[in-house]
Length: 188
Image (cartoon, rainbow, N blue to C red; front, side, top):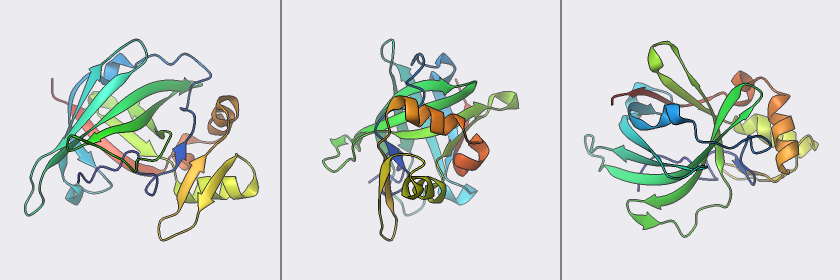
């Protein structure tokens, strides 16, 4: 199985509604194309290629390919992506479609939101929600959701679109989305 857990509920907090859905959910065409880089927080996490393909007026399909590296087999996964904004900040919402060509029977419902930005030189940086911060917000009642404790807690934000976007807007994205998820550079 591919080690790219964009929507694995046990890895990153999930949302029942996509972030930015209170505004226009139009595909960010700057994403369209082929990108190369890494997923994870260090260079040892390996190289990936991500192909963002326009699908319709609301959706981008992303295919992530991880080449065989050392003793690890390569693999591929694809995702349905929507993009939205909260204020001037851009967010990507991913829902898993296939892993190595097979549907995931146990894929959690909802999407995994990522804060993304383009840096000088065109580099794309993506950041995942901080699990501890979101779990604390759910437990305190700041945002509606559930936390299933375990070795890796499963966090699902169940707030409606307006409450979710208000929660996102109320926090500094560098703090709320503090997990370095991916760094990519466009190659086409």
